[in-house]
Length: 259
Image (spheres, one colour):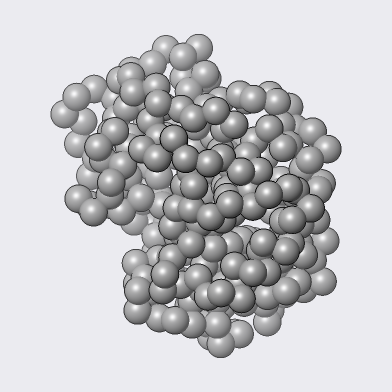
């Protein structure tokens, strides 16, 4: 089974819902390099996983008038985090959370000191990045533009790994990029998610994901990160989903329909 999936939408849809952090799966060979015991690993997965965001995106795709495409990571971000820079540009290296994490959400040891990231980057990160670039290129060819909506969630209470956890934690945080997030996309998202309560901007998480091939270069690729506070739709940490999943899916579908 591939470590990611591109799920088709309408042939002429420019929209690509990107779901990078919803999975908990860790291949056996990768598990061997994680120093946590099984119980501690399950607790870490509860904290770090954007639980049910794949379900929200799937439901939104079914509700939308013109179905978006979906690019879904099937592996935990503890394998690799496909949204990090794979080099020294990544600010999360300061807390051991570059493309390959060495520290936990509570700043404990996840992998042994000196673990080389390159084997995991080569095995998982680069194929993911290539496939995502190809998916964006396909939307450009089919629709003349591509809109990446990055679907995430975050805990109601800040975790120790967060570099900017002291700021506001609104029900929905919208992460933006000065080059790739046009005003009309941001305005549409604010309107669509107004049913969920207040929307905030770039706090506690900022930015959005664009494949490096297009990042800062191609204005036909627009992007927005949607960060949903987990208490809106689930019991934290790692508990069951609630009725908020349907509300959020409808809001995301409304955004897709605008695009």
